[in-house]
Length: 421
Image (cartoon, rainbow, N blue to C red; front, side, top):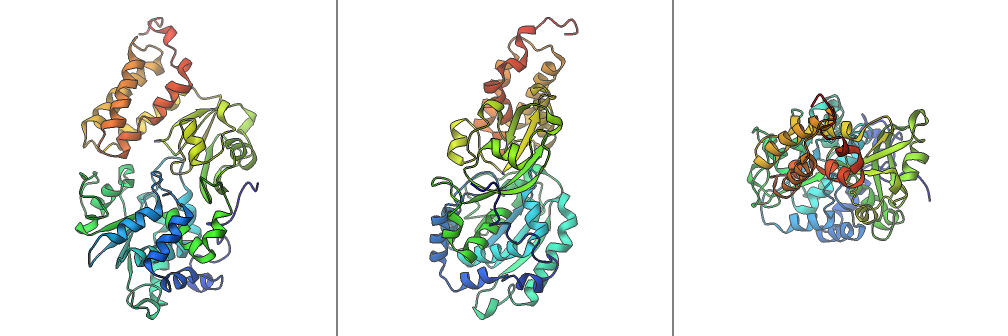
């Protein structure tokens, strides 16, 4: 099986991302031309056949999501590209934005046409502000050539794209929070229902998709679903762009077929552990993802196989940690991150993170109380079940999986033995 592939990333390095003429020279916008000659239902059927799950982390079926958005009545609809890639150890969307911005434009046009939207919004994370001129130029040149704006390619379909920047808040990666931010409000999640698909940006029916999800749509429309599905496995067809980082010799963004193992990703693609240390753990999906031990490294990278060992694909981030790091120190760094990024709107997340941070501090110092681990686990489960949005629901994923796989790392046998306590 090929370790890396070029389907979503096929255009990387093949054209000048600052020039639409360069993009057209490699058959750019052919996906838009094909899509505009199809019906909305035909495109949705292709998306369902491809079985693409959302690539922002939630893994919601794209075909189903587009079908739901298309069925919502409304004269004015909106498509939002979520480019608020704030998950630590996740930078795969950045590779698309910087190396193939016109494919993202194509994906948004196709999505807008499919669901009946007239306006699209790219919400770019503040840390990617250096990419604003590149993306803005792609939008401008696309409009000048008739691929955006009114009456695209004489088809009667009109679609405009607007570029917005966030202010650097991790929580704005959540759909409704992102919408609040675009509207000029504080970045905090909305109460649901009403759901975004019915009442989103400016109270209009709204479709929110990740950068990679939209890029995949353009790719399989251009080449055909069959070409996409020749990669992967029956239950997890296609490819995924991963962000490989941490203690590996060759970190980077790579496109892989679903089905290769974590061992192949870390040792064959990543070149193994840096400085020839031993693998201790890996975290999938960024700071909100679960961690796993070296003993399950031969697990195939598919939705189903990872679920069997309690892991998720998530955003595609794979953080490799070697034997120089204590698990408890790793968890403390994650806890510090969520303390900083919680919006504070709901009590489970606001207070849960704060209390668990105090417990983590005691573990780091080597002086936990006898019931600290039980208390931390109880608070973590309350957060995952009761928090208002995905941040609070997943903030303790690493902790809960560490309790499962690394119980010895919490040092409970040494409780009260440390005189400093």
